Image 1: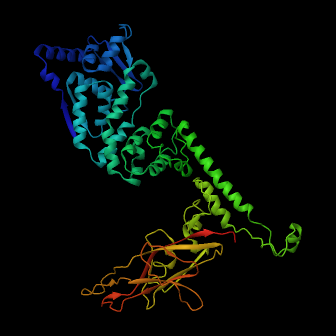
Image 2 (image 1 turned 30 degrees about the vertical axis):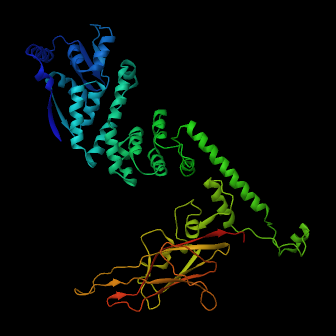
Image 3 (image 1 turned 90 degrees about the horizontal axis):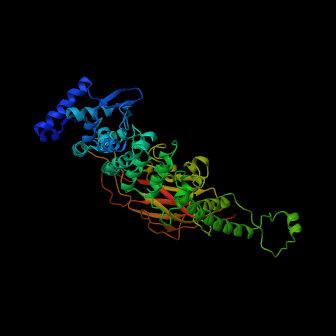
Length: 500
């Protein structure tokens, strides 16, 4: 986008007015009747006439009307400028009636037009931006916004400046909406370097992603920033904190950007709920004796008798599961049900996931995979694109738990019944056949089961014995060019940890 904008106001002026403007242009070129000189650190001076400035800028007109004129002191700090000294271009526009607009300066010049109150320039720039907005330009426009600031001294000398700057930012709401609609989920991280806290808040308010995700995005954004109270206010107002579950956002995120008046109420809920779960855990612990029944000295010391129930040892994973419940802050009072591989693979959500098979916490066994590394049976415990795949005569997969204290209640298996291969010849395409029916086998001495229920994708079923084994039943009508195979992409085991 490159456009040379001509001020139509000049064309509409009568001949006498046009002559006056042209005369002041000559006066400026010759340095005559200069009654205002704008200065800025490390920038050339900008000389002008108050009458021309007042005619084009409502901000400067109001300043000149309320500030006594002192002929001996006509120098004035530039109220608002940018590193490229765009203020000089604006003043030149007042005299020459033309200005060059490009993608690299259009937002900066829009800021000048709104902050200085140049209505005719603001309108043409807004129309131009609307016509040129796309995914790339929208980010570039935001970069221009954060390239400049306004000094506190300017705010004090020009009372209208703060209000005009706020209107400029609000005018960019259509850009924020465009970015929110075209940068989804993790793509929003791409705009971090192009926005400030207020602009990010504007974008997230238009985004359809859930508040829990927005909180994480804000948390990552402010990681290395020093926030003002205004910044915290904008970010706090982004989230619907009236949601009853909003306190959970603070459990998983530091939220140091949250205003204290909001965070105090949420932390109070967290503390209350944690106390409820901690008391329930304490009650559970109190009901368990930590005395080893095999130790006769301990028996005698505690006055136990042969008729008393045996004492029970506390397994490590049992209190650990309860600690995660306390940390979760939902006020639960029952022994928590967990997904086995996810729980032990993240230490209850404290670390990044590791495959429990690699640490001998779970053991998988299966028919020979097509490739031992690419289609390993260990992949069934990961939420990834990897999966187990076997095409033996008898396909099966199973797992054992090395945690005797875990009581299995249900399993969810995710199957993918098709695996497309590359053509073996130009005339024959290799395609794996549908699995057919899957059946659960609970292993016993005869490797048989009393519960031969069909297993459907995503459907849990009851299971209380281990190890667990899945076999593939292939229809006899498998056609030519098809391979009998078993493919399992995920296996989730749900249950609870007991004390022993």
